[in-house]
Amino acid sequence: MAITRRVLGQAKRAVQEVRQGIKRATTALGQVMVEGLAQHLEDVSALTRRVLAQTQARVLEGNTHFQDKLLSLFETGTEAIRKGKAAKPTEFGKLVKIQEAEHQVVTDYAVYPERPTDQSLLLPAIEQHKAVFDRAPELLADDDGFFSAENEQWAQDAGVRNVAIPNKQTRSPARWAFQRERWFKRAQRWRVGCEGRISVLKRRHGLFRCRYKGSAGMERWVGLGVMANNLLAIARVTTQ
Image (cartoon, rainbow, N blue to C red; front, side, top):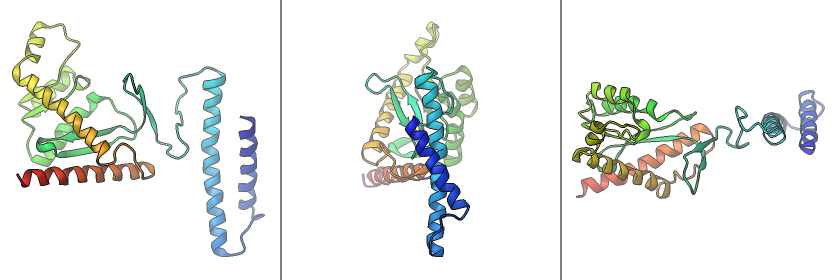
């Protein structure tokens, strides 16, 4: 940390010398480049100070709940996403919503700047479906993270005929009997099949790793992957 602070001091002096005109290029174009590099050095220095502050708090002071953690100097919006998987309990990146209809066609996607709760995504997804198809879906299937009594009621009020969101915390025999009905179990099997769409988007269409920079680049990258998926899915349906 002491070495890093000394490097930050050198960077600060270099930026000040450019700002004061002490260090100048011999051409106008060169001067533009020098000033751009000085601005980049100033930006990286600010990020490095954040890293020093969180290192001081987390490593030396034991504060593991440090707010506004910086996880990458190059992709500053990166978040730690904890899913509780045994093999990979924590992943780094951004939460992406994939909304699928029949024939493996993705009807909507979104890259969220901050991770929302699953429950908050349900109603906007229904409204987006209505905007695309001019009607509510006949069937809505999600995992238990999307369940709440309010969400279930709101989905029905929005015009969804069959809502298949399991409530795994319930102790009601009537609720468990409802979730064992054939249509409900069939809907959940279809939902599990949709998990394969995420795998295909990652493996075949590049969503495992974004190769563009910044949040706008990530949205563009995900959009291109979705377009590639949909072109193949539509081609399969139209050639059957």
